[in-house]
Image (cartoon, rainbow over all chains, first blue to last red):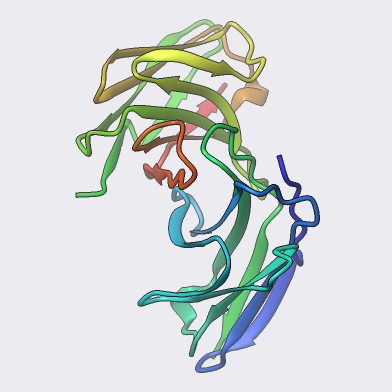
Length: 109
Length: 115
């Protein structure tokens, strides 16, 4: 199971773009990269998933370089409600998914 | 509908009590999970059920007993818990346990306090 490393915390202001990078040096060929968001006292919520290059949905973009040893979650124009913990998980379906420490994003007015 | 429902939302129990946590999903998912989350820590996997059979037990003490009565329901039976077992207990489900794109859908959790 690939181990992930993320910044412990990040600060931003409303309206800014936020990029959170996750390192996963020993990612395996079949592994997908999945990001979850968690608010206090709630369960994690799926944000986005990718395998390579770039994936975009209505809430975020995920950038994955060719070597796949890292990935960057991009949140455009954050608001106060984006304050949460963001987890990067790397694995494939036949392995258990282990949450790393996550990144606490604080968005200020 | 991507909802996983957990009951109760809050539970306070003594160390000699027996209680159960319930989890329900109607997405047709065949894999269900229990996680434990302590304050300011990431979720820790406890159990995995695949097609109603226990497939992973992450060395959880026997005072936690999971049960999967059917494909939509998952229970966690609690007995003789310790104060350090106080935590947020999360249930999740996914389409199947296998497959490269294992996206899990989580419930809101049960906040458990053991006195």
